[in-house]
Image 1 (spheres, rainbow, N blue to C red):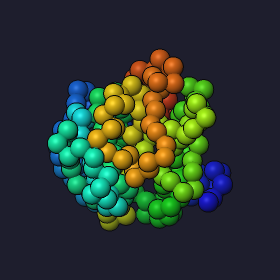
Image 2 (tube, rainbow, N blue to C red):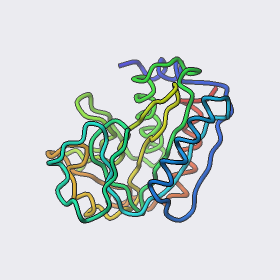
Image 3 (spheres, one colour):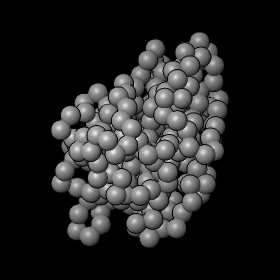
Image 4 (tube, one colour):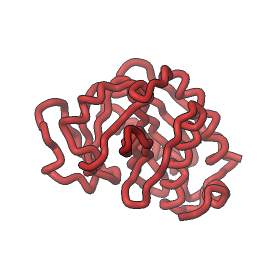
Length: 221
């Protein structure tokens, strides 16, 4: 794994990155169609985009999802996706950041990009005095709590024409019981947590402000 300074050196770009925040709850298939359109536009020269959304309660399956990990197939709508990873949950109180960057202009190293997304999450959590950690054997960002490890953020990406899409999700104050309908990311021995469960009274707007600041340090000069 590259050191953080090396990751930043690979990923940084002086390109203009657009930010967009949607209000309300964004339909997942609407989001997928929008991302696909943006990927085509960015490949043709349009500015890159980070799009912040919340979804209604849904489960999404990545390319490595195992059928047995869908514990309750009728609880919420289930969507197959082309992103990496396994099953995850999206819903109100969780910030999803769809990250559409031109990796060709950022060194083309997908593994470094994934590590950069993890660093982005970790540095954002640190702004709220939460210690987030990565694990070599499982994707996402984890916090230590009550003698165990709990996932506070997930990530899964897809790359088309050298452009990334899909992205990250961070649990601010979702209903954590909604994760019970799946085995999140295929991990059974660890739980999930959120800002709220950890006792941090943070709004999604607070998180958005921090995400924009920390993004600069990793992905922009």
